[in-house]
View 1: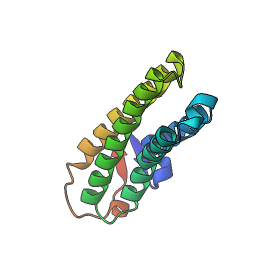
View 2 (view 1 turned 90 degrees about the horizontal axis):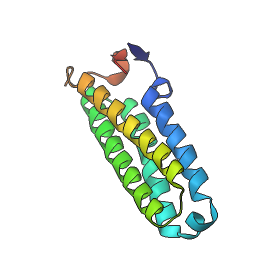
View 3 (view 1 turned 30 degrees about the vertical axis):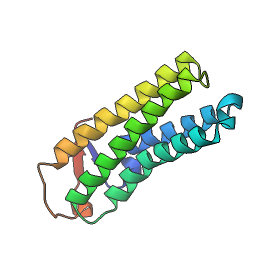
Length: 136
């Protein structure tokens, strides 16, 4: 059981931060860096994964947090999809692709489990009033 009192303590936020870091690293490579549209889109979607977790945690209610987690999960899917396009354009190597897609899948899976845990509260309780404990 994990307990979080701030969004920085959430494993999904920490993994999302790693996703942003790795996304910026691969998009700085020569061919990828020149595709401004794809580079911008994948950077924005990966940032959205991390930022929706933090915004949701800081929101007023558990229900709002669940909504933001859903947005984060959706952005993670978008990021994963763009990695497929990057692979198809030979912007990233197969090994990088597999590592990044696995990270996206891990984040999505863990986010879903947190959402399912929080749904037992399905209330207007303040997020800060709960000690968020969940199976990771």
